[in-house]
Length: 180
Image (cartoon, rainbow, N blue to C red; front, side, top):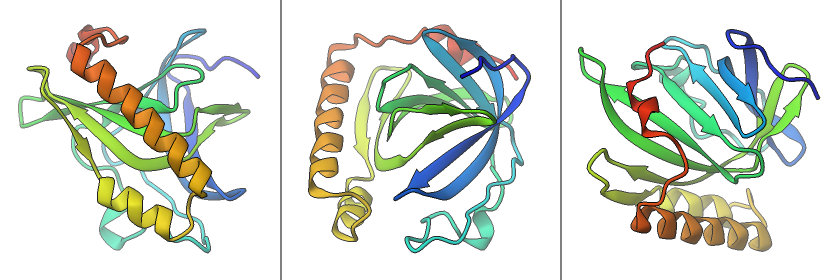
């Protein structure tokens, strides 16, 4: 599959049970063997095709990306992305958001993954917390994931907790100063 060019717009597509679940255009910042970094620009239109498993964001107020946008860092094979968020009028770095998801798979117009609902936040001071465990368990109960998939997602969460507790993160913290 081809490499993406910095500045190119590619689609981040979530695929659930073989069918597109959501789509989000992103702008490529870096695409190299060990890192795919993409940015979701403020106001980006999000789409949710009809699906037997409705997307939790498919609501009238969630049709566009709000805030300062987000930068998403992906390593090949990782079952999560590291998303960076900023806040306030001065666009101060807010936190890292480790978004558990299927490892990304390149397609001609972008990449495919699937959000796993379970997440972690890491504050600039190194404190971290697990997020959305209740949402994850609800999605397991509703059949979004098989028991085997759910166990794999939980195991990935444990690996992330160990990484965050040790402070041994892989990404460059200079990304917090990145400007679109």
